Each structure stands twice: as C-alpha cells, then as structure tokens.
Image 1 (cartoon, rainbow, N blue to C red):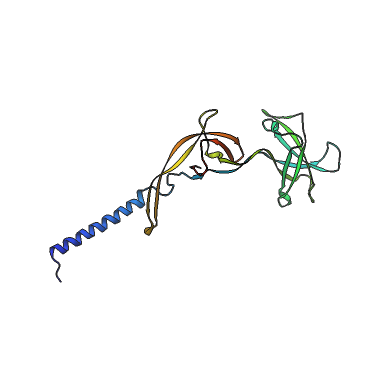
Image 2 (cartoon, rainbow, N blue to C red):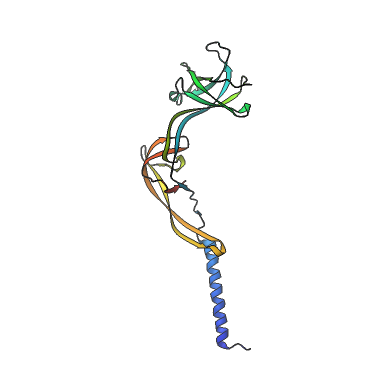
Amino acid sequence: MKKTKKDRLKTVISLLVAVGIIGFLIFLITYSPAENTVGYEPFTVTKRDVVRSFQATGVVVENLINQENERVVVVVVDEYEVTDLATEQTANLTIGALKDTTTSGKIYSISDTPRVNGDTSEYDVVIRFEKQPDQLRLGMHVDVNVVLEDKKNVLAVLNDSLNKQDNSRYYVEMLTEVRRISLSKIGLNKVAQETAERQVEIGLQGDDYTEIIDGLKEGEVIVK
C-alpha cells in the first residue's frame, strides 16, 4: 500500500523522536555525573573504639641489667615519644621470624642517658617478656605496641576526614546528594554530590580514628 504524505510525516516525526531520545540518553551517559564521579568517597559516622598507641620495632638482646638468664627486647625511642612511656606499662609483642607469634611483656626500664642522633636524642627502652617464646633468638626483630589511651564505643571519624582550621578548630566535609539520574533498564545510575563544611569538637585522637564530642550524629555521611 502506498504511503500517504501524512503517513510519511508521521514516520519522520517518529524517527526524529527516537533520535532525540537516543541522543538524550547518550548525553546522560557521557556528561552527567557518575556515581561519586567528583572523587568524593563517603564515610558513615558510627561508634567505634578509639586507640592511641606507641608503635615501634625492637630487637632481642641478652638481659644485661640484672644478669638473669633471659632475653629482652630493646626499643630505641626518640625524645618526642619517650615521655609517653613508663615502667610497668604492658606491651603487645609480635615476632615476625616466629610466624608472627604474639605475646606480651612489660616495660622494665627506660634509660636516663640518651644517645644524641643529630638534632634528636634517643633512649633505650627495655621490655621483658611475661613468657619467653620458644625458639626465640638473639637479634630477632619484635614489633612493639603499647596502648597509651583508649575509649570504647564512641562516635568517631577517620583521622584523614578531619580538616584543621587553626590550632584548635576542626571541621569535616558533609556529603549530600543533590541530583540522581536512574534508568535501571539500561543500567544508568548517576549521582551529583556536593559538600559543606561543618565544625566539630574532637576528643581523643587515636592511631586511625578521632573521637567526635560534638557536631556530628551517628549515621551522617562525610567525605572520607
């Protein structure tokens, strides 16, 4: 059947509409913001343990202090960290050469006389094993971890999420979603996000996380 002028016009219009839809979809895929495309990685604020610890690597030597037949760990500590340590503090010890054997010990002594190394003074800290591991040899290296402060189940954020305004003020960047384009049939899920600064009050600054005393609520999302 021969198409009329009206039929041909409808066909042209249909083609134009189809081309327009395809072009719009291509535009969305190409130019609209992808999921976190601006580089913002989200971090959800939750409660967790915050721990501040001393970490170093020591070496196994003969105990030359009291002449007992035992081996101890000696750690060289600089003047900026030695003030955090005290005798009788518990140390968690990991010996890599013994398949990461873990044990504990206590700080036995801290030298009064430093070794001056350039513009820094260093002190020998001696740690005694509470139970000396089997096959322990002189010269083996030991990873030492001494917990200095800890708080359980407190609101906290990653240290890297904190920004410092001056000597005493801190802020985080709140992450909010401002626009979402979702077309599930073609697998399109685009999100546009923006950030806003919010000042916070901090508490204990740990090895990985910092306690938040005020300024954030559990479940809020910030920039990681």
